[in-house]
Image 1 (cartoon, rainbow, N blue to C red):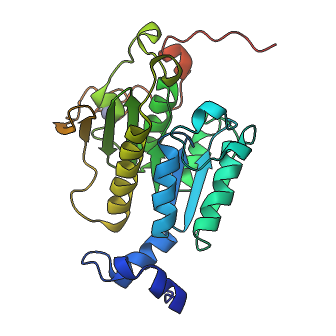
Image 2 (cartoon, helix red, strand yellow):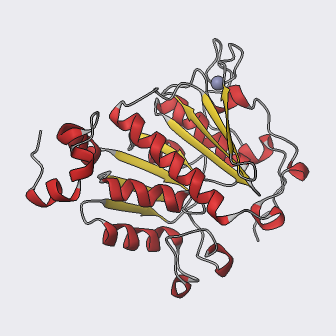
Length: 272
Ligand code: ZN
């Protein structure tokens, strides 16, 4: 394996002395590839910690541009970035934080058409998306491509982090077999989200991702952590594998991407 440079030994000194990481673990991180879906409230802090930790390649999928209302929690962005593609700005910032890191921006939606290609090139996926169609798509594709998935969600003052093993068993569909009706799913714009909460959950996703890459602690095996921000309490929920899961169950019935918006009951106006 390649040796660390003198500069890397200085930069990652606090990792290198850490039992469980060491020079070997640090080299592993430098060779690792993580795909982050969404450069928003979760993706920004997650990406920052992965970049600072020296994860060698970080892919970021996001087709949005920075808006003023993002700045309250999406900590990679500054006022002068408003109007620019998030994935491009994220690349500039992250590479400035750590030149060891290669950031690959994908200024596009994560769709049934491109999802498998994107995920296949990475070791692990962090889902920082904010909608159910993307969350089901990300989970299904991670099962089919055999990649661990670190899932996250925030709503007002509550956040959730889920870890799912490569190949599922369980997967996100085992946790939530069918999505809630779209009229019962308010988004951040309608419901609001506490900025620092996104930081807590995004940093937790980075922590779980780094542990999975290093083989540290409990492997991602179907756990959901629920954080009640107002009470400052974490709840630990075991996610059980469902033998009848349509994707990771004994007799899968969904084996390729479906129309996730239809699955989630979302009717989208046709594009002009
Ligand atoms: Zn499943």
